[in-house]
Structure formats: C-alpha cells, structure tokens
Image 1 (cartoon, rainbow, N blue to C red):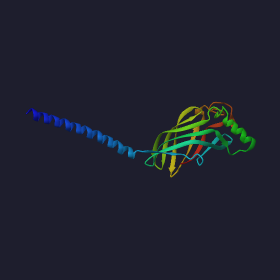
Image 2 (cartoon, helix red, strand yellow):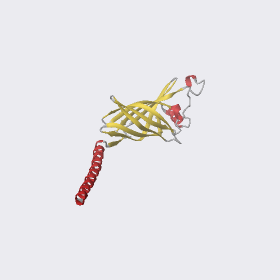
Image 3 (cartoon, rainbow, N blue to C red):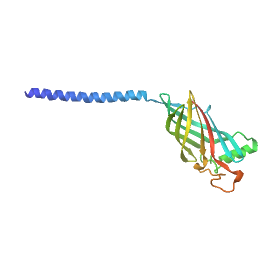
Image 4 (cartoon, rainbow, N blue to C red):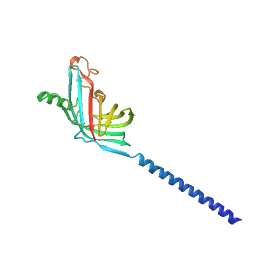
Amino acid sequence: MQSKIYLICNERKIIKKMKTIFSKSFAILSLIVLAAFTTTETKKVDTNKSIINWVGHKVTGQHEGTITLQQGALEFNANQLTGGNFVMDMTSINTTDLEGEYKNKLDGHLKADDFFGVETHKTAALVFTSVTKNGETYRVVGDLTIKDITNEITFELAVSENTASTTLQVDRTKYGIKYGSASFFDGLKDKAIYNEFDLTVSLKF
C-alpha cells in the first residue's frame, strides 16, 4: 500500500515537472517566433546623396541654402518605419541665392553666436521618439536639438522605396536664436526676420 502511494506521489511530481518544463519551453519558443517577426532593420542614410535645403524668411524677402547631413539612419520593421536618428553638420551652413561678399557676410552671420554658434555647437541632431502610420505618410514626433537645446517637433514623412522626404518648420527662437525677431525686439520694421525657417529634406538610404 505504501509502495503504491509512493508511486502515485512520484508520478504526480514527474507530471508536474514535465508541465513546468513544457511551459518554459513553450515560452522560449514563443519568444523566438515573436523575435523572428519583430526584427528591426536599420538602414543607414547615404549622406552624399541626401539633401537638406533651408529657407529663412524676412519682411523684405527670403534667403535659402543647404546644410550637410553628417550621419543618419532609419529603422524599419516589416517594411514599416519605426524610428530614426540624424546628425547635421552645422558648420556646413551655406547660402545658395547669394554670391561673393554678400554670400560670405550672410554665411558668417548664420555661423556666428547670435545665430547657430557653430564654433561651439558644431552639430544639430534629430531623434524620432514616435512614428505613426498616417495614410500614405508617417506622422513623426521627434526631439530636435540645436545649440544644446532640445524641443519636440512633429512632421509628416513620406517614404517610398529608398527615399524619405519631408518639409518641416522650425521656430529658431525656441533654441535661443532671437536675432532680428520682432517677438523680442521692437522697432525692427522691415528689418525683422521671421521666427520660423523651413527645412526641406530628401533622404536616400
């Protein structure tokens, strides 16, 4: 009788142990399968083929130019955009609608401390914090850092094959760039420079 009870108890322990092993094995298998379907692919951006154009507006007109992308990458999961991060070379700020002395003067002013202060702040960065599919495009929320000041920015990004493109507006005064802003200085009249500047971006990856 005691032998029979012992066998029953031992059998129950074996069954319980097997259930535990099966449960753990199933959990591990599930994680492996899940990982197989949620692999993130990082695609580096080709900085030589990518273009960043800027347009700055003032009361009497506008100026435009380029900024060089230093490095960048986009993250995808099952061909869906999930993230991204970029670094811009602020020392490369270049005016394209002027020549000679006027071009050099404006380039120098944009690089000076009362604008982007590139001697101290050589780069600016954008890191995606949220990406949501929005019809044919993606709604991206990101942290944009200029002159070591970070603010949240939201924009629409179109992705097609190996190209991603967007146009976004940046309020320079949020990054401590107040020169010529009518929001902070009175009496500027036609010398006022608008707070927002536009960035048109075309990325190749």
